Image 1: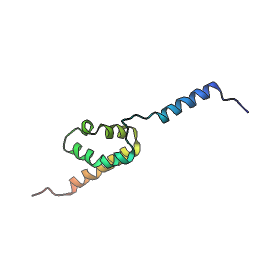
Image 2: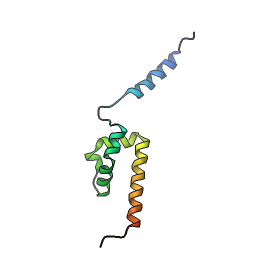
Image 3: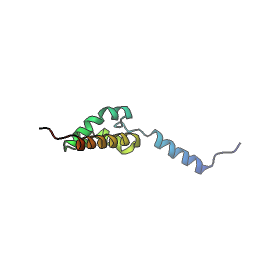
Image 4: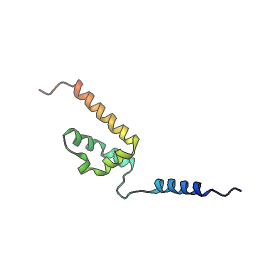
Length: 88
């Protein structure tokens, strides 16, 4: 049986550290999704949602799936703004 090379062992160790390195501040996708409407509402109101919901902002920065959902929600709301007549 072949012994693993030192280079492969180092690579494996580095990959495992990245995989298992979890910050106590990180949230799961479900938690991000649950807070997404509030995050977007604050953003559309001209507020900085990252100050109130920093965990959501951080999650969107590392999770392409949630970021895609976020961008889709923004696009839908912007399209609704264009198609709906103003109140009055």
